[in-house]
Length: 206
Image 1 (spheres, one colour):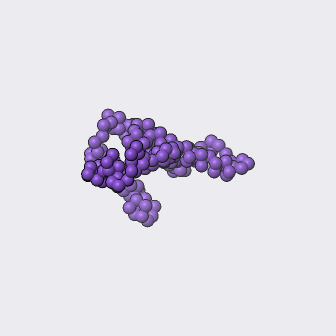
Image 2 (cartoon, one colour):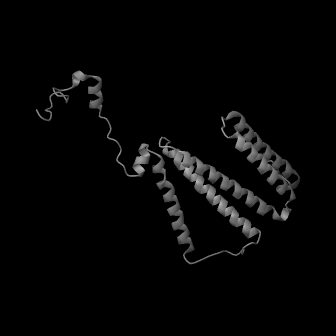
Image 3 (tube, helix red, strand yellow):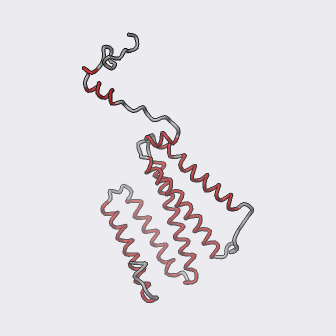
């Protein structure tokens, strides 16, 4: 509704209000429906953020609005990365691998959002050159760094999980599956041989 509702300059404030209302409903729903343990920290943080962000958004000149948007976006990305990092640090060995991978992915995306938005802000604010910053083999170095970052993100997951996928990631052999015969003989001892083996099959020591 926020993106498609406004059709002209006069309708844009209404679209922004709709977006703010949607965010308020989402936050209120979480606060009411979820069993939160840190309301004493969440509510003051929301108050401080509103007290800082609302006046800044109203006073900033329209020509500087792109810088403000980049700054707010970077703060959101950094906050998401910090929360995901704390959740990963609190994770235990019983947490499933998909959840841990999603947490690590949130850290990576949040850090990329923070650094990219910070770079956008300083460029728009003319605190650094607006020309492209290049260096030899720049794309190759960027690709290698991206691959190393993803690899390290995947590599840290097994340190927090002992699920089968986690064991595979750290190259531990999976446990041997229980055969149907073993299950059958455990359920029916009469199916065992003279020394506990299969009927009609010689056992070790016979």
